[in-house]
Amino acid sequence: LLDGLCKAGNLKGGINLYRHILRSGFIPDVRVYSVLVNGLSKQGLLDDATRLFYQAVKSGLTPNIYLFNTLLDGWCRLNQVKKVANLYSQMDSYGVTPDIVTHTTLSKSLSQQGKVHLMLLFLFKMLKMGFSPDVVSYCTLIDGLCKHNNLTAGLQVFSLMVKNGVNPDIAIYNVLIHAFFNEGRLRNALELFRQVSCCGPEPDIVTYNTVIYGYCSMK
Image 1 (spheres, helix red, strand yellow):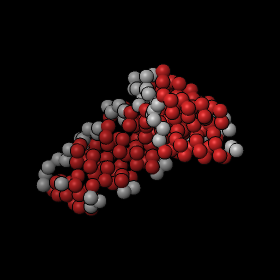
Image 2 (cartoon, helix red, strand yellow; image 1 turned 90 degrees about the vertical axis):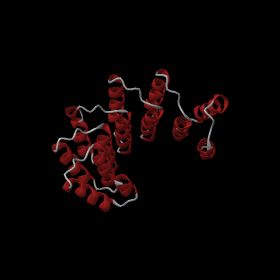
Image 3 (cartoon, one colour; image 1 turned 60 degrees about the vertical axis):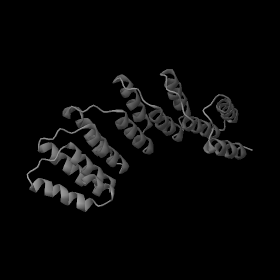
Image 4 (tube, one colour; image 1 turned 120 degrees about the horizontal axis):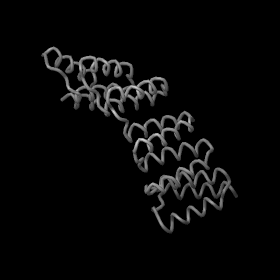
C-alpha cells in the first residue's frame, strides 16, 4: 500500500501511513524506509529524504545498498558534490559495499560536471575492488570523456573495455563516431562506421544521423 501511494505521487498519503505504522507500535523495516526515501528523492526533497535515512539508522535500522544509491542519485541530480562525497564515504562504516549502480551514478554526475579525471579514478577504483563495469558504465565514462574533448582517453577506455571482455553496444560506437567528426577526423569516423555496418552491432537511427550530419558539416 505504501509503495502504491508513493508511486502514484501521493507522498503525503505515504508519510501519513508511515506515521500510522509508528503510532501502532510497529517498527518499519528497510523496505518501508526504501519506499519513502525513494519517494522523497524523486520529488527533489533530498533534505527530508536524508533526514529520514538518519532517523532510520538511529532507530537501529541497517541500511542497504538501495537506500544509499537512492540518496546518491538524488544528490547527484542536484549537483551537490559535498553531499555525495560525504554519503559515499559513509558506506563502508555501515558495512555497505558500493556496487555497479553506485559507480555508474557517480560517473554520470562527474561527467555532467566536467570532472573527467575523477571519473577515471572511479573506474580504476571499481576495477581494483573487483567490480566488472558493464557496457552502460563504460558508455557513461567514454561519453563524458569525449564530450570534454578527451577522445584519446575515451579510446583508451574503449580498448580497456574490449580487453576486459565487455562487448561495446551501438551507443558507444555512436559516441566515438560523433567524437571523430567533432575533431575533424573524417576518415576515422567513416572507418568506424563501416566497421559497425559490416560486423555489428547494427547501426540505429542515431548512427545514421550522426554520420550524415558529420559528413555534411565537413564539406
